Image (tube, rainbow, N blue to C red; front, side, top):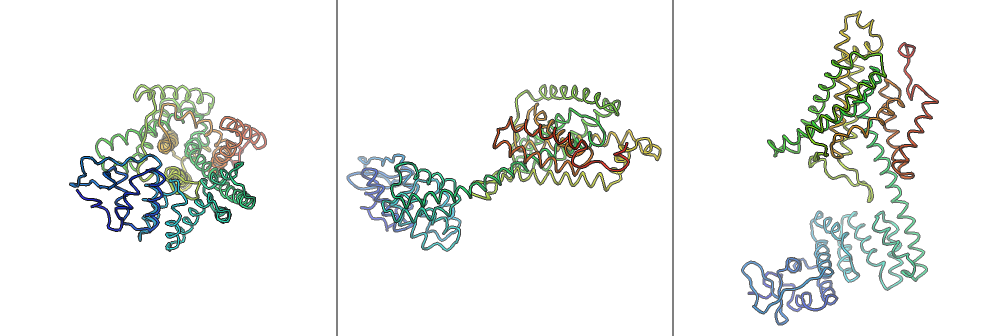
Length: 507
C-alpha cells in the first residue's frame, strides 16, 4: 500500500485529494489548476482516475495498481459523466505540451470532441505560446477563441468573435448560432462581430458543400460511365438493345463477392488484395455469360432491335431468379479492403472517400483501355468493320460471327467490371442492375450512339446535374427533371452530343 506511489512526485497529496474528493465543481477546478502547470507527470494520476484505480480513505488518496493496495475502509472514487469529460479533456490538453508533433495533433483532435471550459484556458495559452507548427498554432488559436466566446468579459468575447471569423469548421458555425440566439449575447458590439463571423464561416462552408456536390456528381458519373461503356459497344456499335446489361453487372458483383469469400476462407492474410483478383474474375465471368447469350439468343436477332429488347428482358428475369436461387433474395455484403476505407479530408466539411476516388480512377482506366482497343488494335478494327459494313467485312475474310461474339462478350465483361466497382460502394443483391440500366441507356443516347467521347461527357454531365438537382428538389423529382431535360435535348439534337460522321452516318 502506498499513497500516490505510481503518481509523479510533482503532484502533491493535497492536490490529488482535491481532485479526487469533494463535489464535482471543486474537483474540476482543482484538476484544471493542476493541469494549468502543464506538468506531464499529472498524466498517470488522471489515467488512474479514468480506469477506476483510485480509492480514498480518511482524506487520503490511494492509487491501486499492480501489487499496491488500499485500506479496507477505502472507498472507490466515483466519477460522473461531467467529471469523466473533464478528466478526458485534461488528459488531452496535457498532451499539447508533448515534444512530438503527432501527439500534439492527436491531442487537438481529441479536444475538439470535448466540452472545454475557461478554467482550461491557461494550459491552452501555454501550449499556444510554445507551439512552433503553424497549422497547430492556428487550431490552438481557434480553440482559445471557442473558450473565450463564453467569457464574462465583453472584450474577450469580442476578440474571440473576431478570431472565429477565420474558421471554416461546422462546429464553429453551430457555436456562433447558439451565441446569436435571443438573450445569449447582450453586448451589441460582440453581437455584430458574431454576425460578421457567421457570414464568413457560412461562406467558407458553402464552398465545401458545392465542391461536395460536384465530387458526388463526378462519382455518380464515373459509375454511369462504367455501366454505359458496355452499352456503348452492345447498343451503340452492334445495335442490340440489351435489357440484361444490368444483370451482367450483377453477375460481376457476385463474382467479386465469391472472390472475397475465397480469400477470407483460404488467404485471410492477403484479404486486403482480393480486389486485385476480383477485377479480372468479374470481367471473365460476365464476358463468359455474355458469350453464351450471344451464341444462343442474340445472334439470331441482329437487325431486329425490338426483338432483342424483348428477348434480353426475358433473359434478365431468368438471371435474377437464378441468382436468387443460388445466393438468396437478401443482399450480400462485400467488404472494402482496408486501403479503400476512410477518406481524405479536403475541407472541414468535405471528405473524399477512398473507395469513390478509386472508382473514378478505375472508370477512366477502363475507358482508356476500351478506347485503345477499339481504335488501335486489330480486334478493334475488325469490330468497327463488321458494325459498319458486315458484308464487306465478310468479303475480306473477317469471321463476322466470331467478331460478334467477341464484341458482345467485351461489352458484357465491361458490365461485370462496373458490378465489381459498385460492390465497393453498396450491398450486392439480385436487383443491383435495375437501378442503373435506364440511366445507362440515357447516357448512351445523350452522348451519341457509338461515340465513346459522347458517353464520357454525358455520364459526367448527367451525374453532376442529377446531384445538383437533388439538393433543390429531392431524389425523385431530380430524376424526373433529368429525364425531361434529356427528352428536350433529344428533340433538338436527335443524334446526341456527338453525331456520327461519314458513311456510317449516311447508312
